[in-house]
Image (cartoon, rainbow, N blue to C red):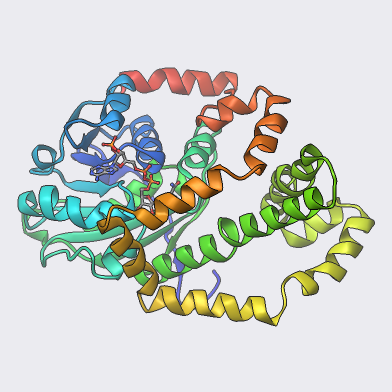
Amino acid sequence: MPDAQTSIEQACTTESLLGRSVVLVGYGNQGRAHALNLRDSGVVVKIAGRTASTARARAESDGFQTKDTAQAVPGADLVIVALPDEVHAEVWESAIEPHVKRGQTIGFIHGSSVHFGLVRIPDGIGAILVAPKGPGSTLRERFIQGQGIPALLAVAQERDPGTGGPTSHELARSWAAGLGCARAAVVRTTFGDEAETDLFGEQAVLCGGMMGLAQAAYETLVEAGYPPLLAYMECVHEIKQVADLLYARGPAGMRAAISNTAEFGAYSAAPRMVDDATKTAMRTLLKEIKDGTFTRTMQADHDAGAPWFRAQRAIAKAHPMEQSSADVRALMPWLAAEATGGTTPSVDTRANEQGKHTQQ
Ligand SMILES: NC(=O)c1ccc[n+]([C@@H]2O[C@H](COP(=O)([O-])OP(=O)(O)OC[C@H]3O[C@@H](n4cnc5c(N)ncnc54)[C@H](OP(=O)(O)O)[C@@H]3O)[C@@H](O)[C@H]2O)c1
């Protein structure tokens, strides 16, 4: 590998989790994929959540036992926090911390709440991180296909070994293996590096920068009088096709697969679209992530009832691009299944999916 600060966890297997008690708190984007992949890997998983939880109902219909979080935590070897980051602190304080004992291990899927001090894990309790590098739907989809996506792994502190059994690190390795991530790569890092690079990547490129560029490009074409359907197809819909090439072939491979015209235009446009001012903005984003400003701001908004977040969501949802999106997606009815996390499975995959109900 790569560099001095990371290493690849070699030969991860599910062994340390077999016969252990694993509780997943939360059954959303990541939680459901973790639960299904772990179960298909032979790990017994229970789902925990609040009493009136729609997610719990979904977990039960997927064949899982569910419990209130406070009742599920005692005795679990590994408690995985699969909740939105902004509720980690309140759920930790109300339903996990009062019931957790020395020797148990708490798992996170993203490191912000621990790294920025919203959740403080007491001595003797393990704190581990397994962060798959992709959405829950992709984690599940690739697992079903017999593949996997890479994950970052970190151990913030080891559990008290007094009760015997696997170390927190061993539990993390088995968790990553059960997700199918070891089929790709499990990269050892720190909570801090995972949290900061993840926040930066999603803000600067994946969700912030990319969507900002796509929306501005869509608006530019529509304002110039082009049909919204064309604007959406060109500036948003086709991101997937280019991203797939980038994913599978890398930047040079992607460029080899596009036309010379597209490649020529890319070289001439990129420095005009992304200039020194953009890099300065990126450095500012990174600074505000590293010094905790971003996390504190988001948490304060959440604690006040999320007025800013809700307003932004409403503005984004009302953008005319949404109608163009619906029009384009309606041309391809099979996209509806992908949107709900379902895929059209292969024959082998169906066998795998059916098998899951017998493993609980
Ligand atoms: N989204 C991704 O694909 C992705 C990718 C990488 C890492 N991560 C990380 O994975 C973790 C989970 O993210 P996510 O996107 O999977 O979360 P999510 O889908 O928003 O989580 C939904 C789950 O959280 C529960 N929940 C929400 N608010 C709650 C509250 N106040 N009290 C108790 N339970 C509550 C929901 O139950 P109810 O039915 O009761 O609301 C549901 O079980 C985060 O740390 C995130 O950074 C996510």
